[in-house]
Amino acid sequence: MIDFHTVIVGGGVIGLAIGRALAQKGKDVIVLETASKYGTGTSSRNSGVIHAGIYYPKGSLKAKFCVKGKELLYEFADKHKVTYKKLGKLIVGQSDDEGKLQAISEKAKNNGVDDLRWLSRNEISNLEPELNVSHALFSPSTGIVDVHSYMNALEGDFINFSGQIAVKSKFQKAVLENPEIPLWKVWVSINDQSEELEINCNYLINAAGLEADAVANQIQGLKKELIPQIFYAKGNYASFTKRCPFKHLIYPTPVTGGLGTHLTLDTGGQAQLGPDVEWLGPVDSSRLPGATLDNLNYEVDTNRLEKFAHDVQRWWPSLDVSNLAPAYSGIRPKLSSPKDPPADFYIQGPQENKLGGLIQLFGIESPGLTASLAIADHVIKFCKH
Image 1 (cartoon, rainbow, N blue to C red):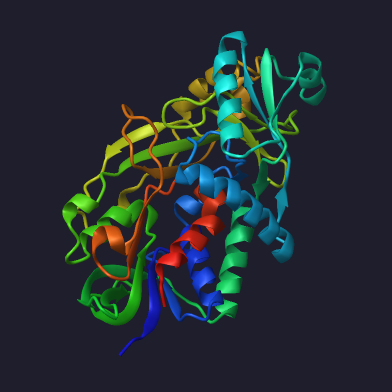
Image 2: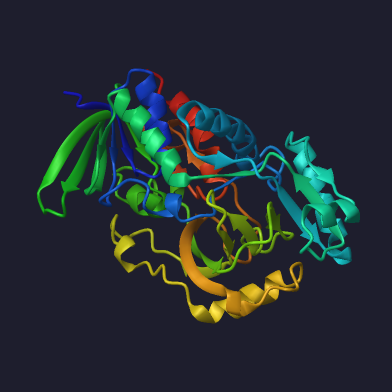
């Protein structure tokens, strides 16, 4: 007996987007979420930026899905009245950063982002008088979105098309009982109870974010070498406590592990700086699903504020550290260590894992929010019937 066409593990923005896309096609779908509400992990702990697709290597999934996802997200937001603002952003640098900015400009062109342009010093001063930089690239298609409004709209669409979300539902294990149909049996614990519920489905999608490797480790028959090593990187944010003098997002040139400590604005005009990159190290994929979540520390250490101010004063010299306060943090599941170049998204289909009906998503970090609808369109192509 088939209970659902698809079981999706993970109720973040990616799981919701995939669930919505399948439900729109008339499939019976259930999303399993360990927490008491969907989207409380990485999905809700970020800058809320709609990225243009500038930084990623040509031909990468990040580049492809970001550029396409940006278009889809703006269309979705207009249709569903999701709060967003297409503010635009300046990528800034001093005279010794010109080469880095030139490389960013070339990457953007290679990715099909054709609206990026260089600003003169007069244009920089007119747009943002507080900036003290030699060079700037302007990205007019970069924006911000109310992430919770976006996820609520995804959830609303998903439910309207008869999708189901089961919160406080922890994935325990899964086994492929019949590879031909395919037929999966999935065990789930409900409300932290020891009793397990069994669910039968044709397709199993692992979109568990920070827990994707732990979920994969509990899928019987999956070769361990197909489970990548995940590295956690914490991104801390500081809030600017005074009225913000900037009208656009301000980004420096990227640093190892991230895009540098930048200034973003939320839809209410409040400014925050971040994220920085605090490496938490490799995680043990043999841990049980859910074991990570209770041990994550999202507090922002006040001692980091001096470093925030120091980094930002390079392009905003009048910033005073006394006007900064700890805000929030998020944790990214990265597929590369601090010593490695940034890794691409890893989407593993049945042809690779040799388990019919299994699709897994690893290392879905930035620009995952922007790319979410494009990722969903890609993933559902694995569901052949």
